Amino acid sequence: MELVELPVPEPKASEAVVKLAASGVNFIDVYFREGRYKAPLPLVLGQEGAGVVTAVGSDVRSVKNGDRVAWSGPLGAYAEYAAMPADRLVPIPSGVTDQQAASAMLQGMTAHYLSHDTYPLKRGETALVHAAAGGVGLLLTQMAHNIGARVIATVSTDEKAKLAREAGADEVILYTQSDFEVETKRLTGGKGVDVVYDSVGKTTFEKGLNVLRPRGMMVLFGGSSGAVPPFDLIGLSQKGSLYVTRPSLLNYIASREELVARSGAVFGMIAAGKLKLRIDHKYPLAEAQRAHRELEGRKTTGKLLLIP
Amino acid sequence: MKAIRVQHTGGPEVMELGEVPLPQPKPTEAVVKVSVAGVNSIDGHFRDGSLRTPLPFIPGQEGAGVVSAVGARAKTVKVGDRVAWSGVLGSYAEFVVSPEEHLVPVPANVTDEQAAAAMMHGLTAHYLANDAHKLKAGETALVHAAAGGVGLLLVQMARAIGARVIGTASSEEKARLAREAGAEEVIVFTQQDFEVEVKRLTGGKGVDVVYDGVGKATFEKNLNVLRPRGMLVLYGMSSGPVPPVDPAKLSEKGSLYMARTTLAHFTATREELLARTGALFAMIGDGKLKVRIAKTYPLAEAAQAHRDMEARKIAGKLLLTL
Figure (cartoon, one colour):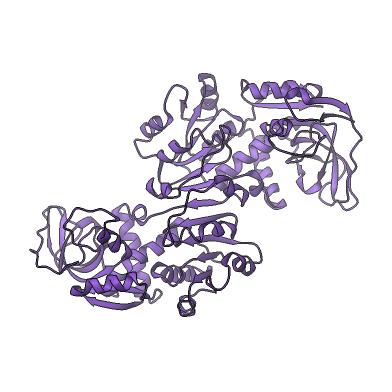
């Protein structure tokens, strides 16, 4: 990753150019940098940002110059200016800062679709949230708590346990010290949880199925410990007519209508003070390398932003 | 009493009519004089040993009849009650003993034949359409084996909810039955590729839910005909077990859901069993659900009933009458 001078992009007919105020740093950026995910080279990294519209293409109706907007998805956010498909830009309300918006697009909308659509949590239900002090985990825990669900969280350290509790987790299991299967069964009186939200994958999947109530749902939304190997379906019926889904954000913001509704809901929570973001790590754009090193070294908690 | 006994597992011929002692109820059991017993593929699996139970045994899991004796602490049924059941081994007999909580009342406007025929297939169709995936008016469902025992009932229930049903069937004759049950489109899968046809019939959008009791033969293509965020409900594997599934496939094909369900988890409490059978019997009593009874046999001809069932030539329910 090198800082270079490039021409300010011109918008195509359906695009808008945004002057960036903040860019989110995400693990997916590392995958593109390494080449694990492919994109034509050379490329400007970054899939999440917020800023002000400075130019629009001839067909654009959804935004205009001067609008404060945010996005996630299209590449090109590690820059002073980015040309974006206009229908992927969402308005930022006045109660939300650019930095909050840039922080919340990917992880906030992920936490939102998981808790409101993939498995619409209800008051009184119990959710097991793995990696509850992670980027999505802290937001998901808050949303689940705000819905009125009971949250059982897993984390790796005492410090992260404290963060998960502050976010609203009712119970926190330090999986480095106790077996989460045994603990979850104990904490639910043997009944099991209604839903497991799992971004860890390989090391947690099988035990996750064992802690679901009959007809409960496994939501596998990532694989930070590695990919889950193929699993036997008969286990799902023997363990209680279980459901499994493997969602990704794209399918939950596929239409402009859904994208605007979902980002609007997340921004509404932020503006109302119901969703706290941890923006603890800000780097000048020139220090993108350091941001990646610290993200990969797992030295950070909360969101990393680049400030152009 | 007379009963069909299996002394050793094997083909239909291992089922012999014999005299066995009348069963006595334990404190929370009841004895039922069987009027009608349902014939199901699971009976064949126990008979041929692919499912295991101690020998000798009396086959049959489902039936209807009248309570003839109750245990000392039985509270939910009394002598003279008309009842039906499923999941009680020993139903191919003049009398069967059952835990009382497995017996459900049969309303006056439902016959014993209808009740016996509807318990396993009807309850299965009911949980599939209402709980495993809660179908809504305007949704589109793909129902495999739509002229099968569960299929014909599921198609009717889905139609009653207001969903559009695309069915698959193996022959024109079965396709006609599925259409009569309410399927808007039926794909004869021996002549047409169901993946291609379902995509065409949905304008490329895919279906909201696939109900599949077939398993191995249909699994991969099922994932290709679901809309993004659609649901695959697997409730049986008549073509063999599905090989292990890579969960990444579910995201690649559009954030899909998958469930592998069995009836026991949808009738787990007495409350749920009563609610579900009550809803089912109400549909039958009101004439909204037609139970297709293909053939009835005397108890002594149980072996012939199994032969006919396993030849897969008869569409609809087979019953033994006593």
